Image 1 (cartoon, rainbow, N blue to C red):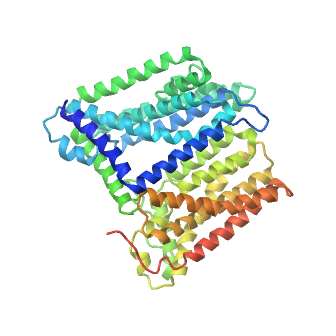
Image 2 (tube, rainbow, N blue to C red; image 1 turned 90 degrees about the horizontal axis):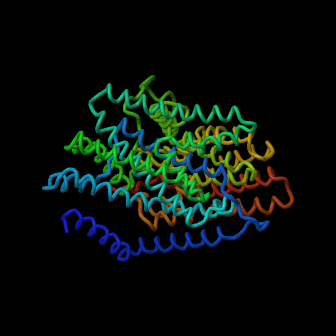
Image 3 (tube, rainbow, N blue to C red; image 1 turned 135 degrees about the horizontal axis):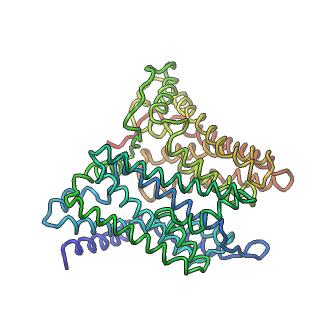
Amino acid sequence: MSALAYLTLTQFKNRVKGMFRSPAKLIYAIIVAALLVLVIVAGNMPNEDGSVGTPDATLGAIIVGYFALMFLMTANSGFSTGMSIFKMPDVNFLFVGPFKPVRILFQGMFNQMATALIMAVVMLFQYGWMHGSYGVGLAGMAALMVGYALVVFTAQITAMVIYAVSSGRPKVRKALRAVYVAVCVIWVAYIGFRALGAENALSGICAAAVDPFGRLFPVAGWLGGACYGVIAGDYSSVTLPLILWAVYAVALIVVMTRTDQDYYEDVLQSTETSFNAQVAAREGRVSENAPKNISLGRTGLGGGWGASAFYYKHRIENRRSRKWLLSGMEIIFVLVNIAFAFFMRDTGIVAPLAFAAYMMFFYVATGRLVKEMTKPYVYLVPEPPTKKLLWCLRESAAGYVTSAVLSFLPMAFFVNAPVPSIAAAAVAYFTYAYLFTAGNLVTERVFGSMTVKALIFLFYFVVLILMAVPGVAAAIFAGKVMPEWCALLVLSGVNVLVALLGVFACRNILSSAELNT
């Protein structure tokens, strides 16, 4: 057995042993497995009318669109910091060892593929609505998981190749960027042209995404179309996309191994960046994703005294760390909310609101308050802790309002729901933001500095569910005697009360620092 093969098998064996020897990891794995079983069992139940959905072009558009989003986001990193499939131990030991660069590259690719498959397990939690709405079975979900893993893996290799080929070559980078943009523009223009020529624009978009030309979009169209073919039972349409993907993947590997045998220097920066982010997460620190070229603009806070200075400080940090009204991650969340509402447009506004609230679970973690609490300054200012907390919370209000308006305003044009209900859903979305922020504070209050540990994350998840239950229960009871928009306003009111209760319980959280050093 070769040294690299032995290393890979030993790492896998140690990870399995580590899960059984760590009570936190074991409990977390058992709970996740139980939740997956519950989702699958509940998802196999028929709809209220006893029917089960069937695959259609809408499902194919969802798959292709989601794969395209993941591929473009990951591949785009190749134009900046790059994407690495290696870790710092590989840099410290394998890169300096007596191994051929090609073998190390394939070992890193194998490990990354395994990681991508593990990440794809999260897709099983979408089994319920996909089975009920489109009749996706377990075999179809397995195809989606494999397709997702291949998309993420290929996108990472693409970013790695782009960075290796264009690093230190501005002209090459501009040429690759032009190709990247041109391919996206052509694909979007084709879908838009098909939508304009169809009787129903929305149906035209879905049909265009899964027709033979729409499936030609690199990687996402190939693998998304193949997954849709498997789910729909059209296996004749699976062979060609898989061949195209295989040729593309082999071409990337050939470029990486032939044009630059000594690729180590090309991945060092991205590996170090990834390593620093992991260390920051383990230590409870939040890394700042600011652009390389910051537009300084005017200087000074522009206002504030005492505790209020943090509000103006956060506004300046937001302005300097983004190019648009919202950050890149916030824009992605808005687009994903709109896309989900579009595909669930016939179900009303409740399903899009539930999904948007689910996305808010990740959105609140990007707020300035979470980042500020990992630094000592907010604790040292001689002001009452409650006052400092409220001023820090104020900064996120504008972003939450903007996100709510941009997410739900377009829904008024295509979601099958009255305008008052959509407006009330936007209000509920805003209240969920501060409800989950209060959940962050409660978890921080109990465990101190948030670190990425299984039991802490599980507690955080349970806290958010418990805090959301009163509002959902009140809305269900109110919906029996009130219009839908009134029930959503009741949901918002209860969320506000629970959030205020959580903030009040944590009002002294800024009185003393519990930082990891």
